[in-house]
Image 1 (cartoon, rainbow, N blue to C red):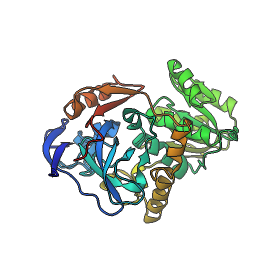
Image 2: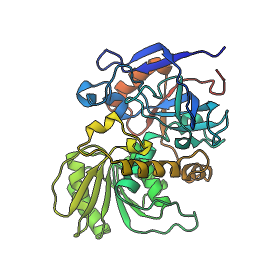
Image 3: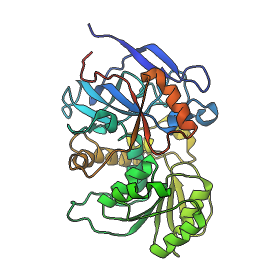
Image 4: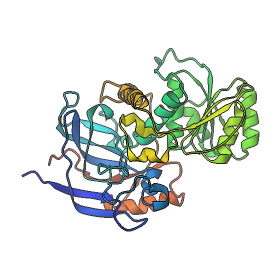
Length: 366
């Protein structure tokens, strides 16, 4: 007999603490969707934001399931794109909706998931979600860069792009995506991350301890630099990115809202949620919400990179040209998520994604 309920971590009524709901309804997939038994869920900063009313008043609801990144097995498919039994990964708008990854099951659109190669562990695959698509969205939709992957033997160094905060989850993916597309990648990071980022494709890795000095060095290395992705998104890092641009200025995109008024520098902020292609309450955090046209464009971008085994991402993973972030496996399953979030808030998990085991028997059907 098919169960109708599952365990899920919801926002709940207690401030700053998630609530484990042991009788949450299992969602039903609609046409074009799949039901996934979640094997692993990786955590992200927004999973902490939703527990803080001051940061999430625009979209916080007690019944929302938290968690965005996931990997697992498709146990019901209403799409010809994905067969039952497929191993998949991706992200869902957890925290903002009743579908989240900190749950035993989730429903998602078939064309927004990525097939996991047979040789990739599902815990590692769970990191290819929110941070990955944030990098794709920021670089393509926001900065306007062409990201079509080049063949491995055709990659040549093109125009320069600065990735400030290269050792963040988004930065790690941005470096790889840019390099695969043929850009000259300048990144900033702590000295102990330099070798790792260079192995992922960064042409130059500069220290971030002295932003003014680093900005000056970037201007020397790339005097015509016009694009920067700020993965830290503080007022200090955004200003450093702006000052690193060439004499003609350019475009700085931040992952959190940062206001700055610097001549010839355009500073933007947007939410990756627009790649889902539909209005969402989280957009209330933005001064200018994405238009219908922008939602349609961003949705096409997402399907171009996802779409199970038809998009760019699966092919790059299969070829070994795209690598997940480092992970820390956290103990305790759903009950242990709160501890992982608190450790993230305190900065104890920097440099790696915390991954939670949700349903270890991911191939088991319900």
